[in-house]
Image (tube, rainbow, N blue to C red; front, side, top):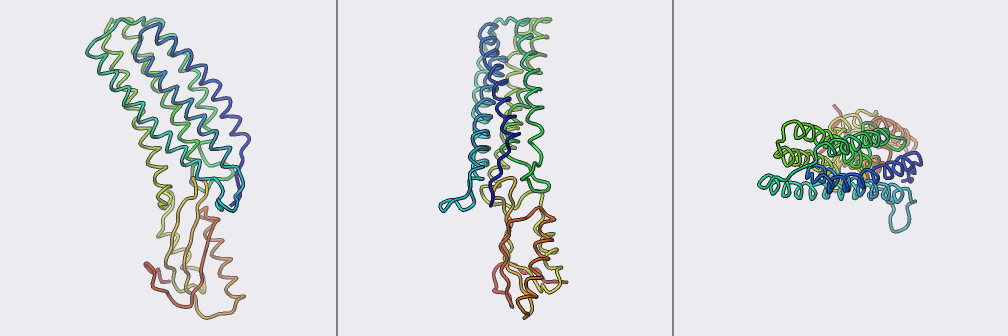
Length: 304
């Protein structure tokens, strides 16, 4: 399986890291200055953005390494592990935000709402810019399968997008506190940011764990693949069919295909047609075993 370096995407990550790092410094200093938990919560989220972007960039570079004798699939799975770690860190930071929001709810503290508003607005602008930079890498790029997404890039994108949404919450809270003096809005918005982080965490964890347990890619139907293979002339039935992802951009398949007794040349024709049909599903890495009769493993899909 060939590596898939993507220099354009790597440059996007470097630029995103630099911009997000500037936002982190501004929001930490601003949160301490204004005494805003919402702004500090947003800063914590930004810190996780920096961590996620750095981890995703490292995984992207490592996944471009070629396969070797010890890692015959290459290092593609590192992208999935990076996404999994990002999902776990999102959940951890959400728990901390909920804890601090509860403490602040019980004991409201004075806030410099005008300064908080300005800092959050600047953070929102940069977050939207970074989200736009990463957006192009979320959907299928040159190594991706049809209908698939790079989970590693998607996890980093969700980090930044979630932070942009939370910045909107901080801006609204700052404006309302400035007008009304309702200090309880600060911990309330912090809790809202925590909920957004939990949702992002669940989506990333679900996708990465599904790949790690070798589940069928969500955009593919095992039934449709089986029927398509069984529809090839000369194929009697298909069984012991397995479809899984090496990473979010590489789908693999193995199957036993029962055919009538035939010459080797006829078998080559069937194999060519099977691979052509599977490529329509975005499946390029295949292991197909021909048999003259079913070996009894798993379910059998017989030509109708």
